[in-house]
Image: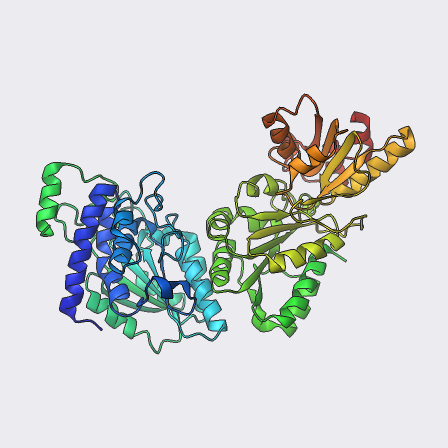
Length: 272
Length: 304
């Protein structure tokens, strides 16, 4: 495991990139910022330790970004892992570009599944985990969901499926930032009430951690080693983490960061 | 033998030799499935009534090199999980075979929840998905051999009732259709699934009544080579399409679109017989539904 200091420094670099690319390409900045430490833990903490060539082989851990609107975070991460070039990174979302749209696309090297419509990732990763189990492979299957995404019924279908098949090789992480697209989740859904109990009662091994700490994410993944059940990590995070104007404010899920004074403030806060 | 049992037996024989073959169902049974469950329990998954999860999990398993067959009632495994089919199977281009029993009005008296009269219109909008609509078991056997090797996603709609065997030569999967009888005549009937036997009856009756030769083409793959049907037959003047499916976007509609787009509509006439949308969602026996929609042998003969 890399040192905490090193992981923090990568997280900082990733935030700076997300802001820069997000402003230029009009990506989803705030939702990308909430999951920075989770992605850093996965990609730089030893779990998704493969390059472009190893990615093509099926014998490896997998990762699905089910909350596909955190595309900027993932693309920047894949840039830091040398999957994609700087040129492609900064040309993403442009019409005719190799990188289509404002959501994760499987044609991008390093991306397992096209996402952007919610409620697909947990089922897909469950399928991969079950196939791996049947093939007697010991690989882990990670999937990152949004908290508001858990309103989708398909998430709970998958939760039952994974639990019945005892998919202990499945590690689902929920970016629990408390905000959906329009509003704070508490204002429109009861899905997060007794959230831990809901998953426990569905037969999952559940942990609650501070998701804005890569160290905590890595420790919680380590704790799944001897689990006999599918694993859920409820990662409490702050949406827009690192930028004072965005933190915990729903409006920034879709609002463009285009006022010069706001851009200047954000850049200053991230030392760009 | 019922189409679904025939198909499940084929999967069973292949699965015995290949451990990578997995059959998933949403709690749907079949006589032939009992043997499969007993002999190959590790290759059978009853995932419960959860079509959305089944399709995406099947895609995930296919991503890990498993060969997946998904079995259900056609109406449930198409529309309930349409987006999952579109994105996780079709867009991801993963080799999942979805086979639904109960094409069209097979479950006639079960009502609109079990009717599948719009699946062709809807699923033919999916770029990578191959759609099969076999008219009988010999054709289904060839379709099975094809999908077993295929790297593309596909959907097979099976009639619930046993279907009569028909004349056929070797199937060409690039064409997606075959001539049941006369090839180069000025009038052809094009049909699919259970309606091909109706088309054959019409052709025979017209031969007896008017001594006129009418060709019959059976479409077994909905993504078929339409151009070949139109261009290979220089005598062709009239096309009659018959389907137990909504006229909106179905088989006849595929011809209408093409004839109009390539300005062939003045040279070749088209008459479409199928389910009128005003009659959709009706409860009745299959015979009554055919009569109501004018797709019986005698009613079609009167109009052509």
